Image (cartoon, rainbow, N blue to C red; front, top):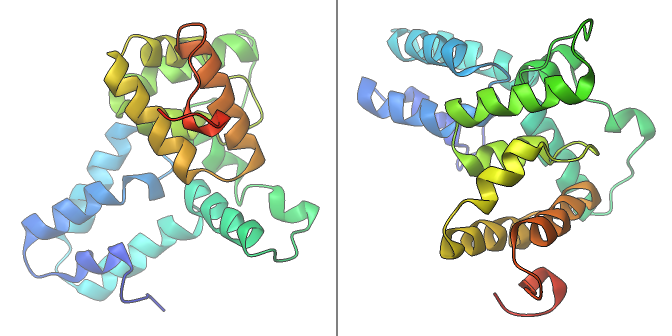
Length: 198
């Protein structure tokens, strides 16, 4: 059952424009590329039957890697029991789609595919969302993402790091915060997550 503060409830609104705005807010629930998301969002928004809209949306939600790990992070924060099986994504296919990675690495090696997928996502999505995607795994952040963050004006870099340092709690994501702070700022810079103000 959906909670009253569930952002998906916006899809029940009668105005198509409001439903379209809701879909944009729910982009992270969809483990797919931008082209597929755009097509799926248009389909969901256009469905006349609200129950059909919600059923289709919750099929995506059930296999969403992002939501799965947000819920896992909440469980860790609440000191609930977490098993090894809980650490696995609900679907490896969904995880690969989320990161624009092939399931078969024949030809190009993993590092090359990792960088290529980051290049695609940087074109399709905003930088903060791309950083969030690639920080969900214990794998080094793609160099193209590090470069994109480093190329931001100083104030924007600080704001991005402030946002992720204050909201991310999982050990893996915090390691990525430290890595970004070390890689994307000049020597001597000490962000809040290291005990000094931004």
